[in-house]
Length: 302
Image (cartoon, rainbow, N blue to C red; front, top):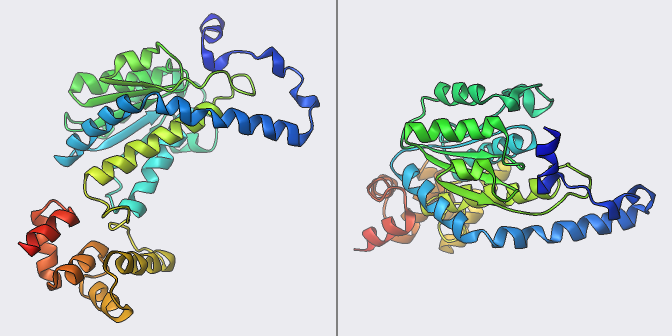
């Protein structure tokens, strides 16, 4: 195990930082900020690979498949975080984007010993979801060698599901096991082996892209507006009204009337206003156009 860790870029020791604890707080903060500044560039070098993976995910989800993240520790928590943000942002069913973490929910807040070392546990977690060939599974691991993440990808691939391996080391076993291998090489961490730092930031940026751009491809936005937002509290209800206003330029009275008629559905309200149709017609047009507002609007206008 020690030999394996010694070979990983993310675990490398940086002797020039051996006395970091003797620096001032501002000096350490400046160092960290400089380290973080290099992460977007590392992501940029993988953009063609990321884009290809997103297109493949969108194709699967477009025919009813799910997006499943699987990881351990920080990587698993980031996947769970990204999945949990999709329902309020894009009005997805909670079962449509799923985050699996080795050790289950308790692992979100504490270490579950040995969970990350079990490929069998990953297989069991995926089997509990009744995984199908229409689904997409993203294994996430900074090292690229975590058995739970690799086991998830290998099992998903045997079933015929789309697989993506997201790692932060070159030549990783995880990337090699997947249909789409994404390796964001950010280099050694400020604190040796603390991959919640640059590696975690890199993984978060890529997961943001995977879910957000997939949802754009699925028609969950109109331009850069969150037209599928779920208005579950007053802040989101206010955001819904603002989104309709930005999309249509309508008066407050028109917006309130359209939202009331659509049961609070932002997309339907926008279509009703822009196309001059009633709420049932707006709902029908959206259903006929797979929820894509721009396509439904074109259909309404003939």
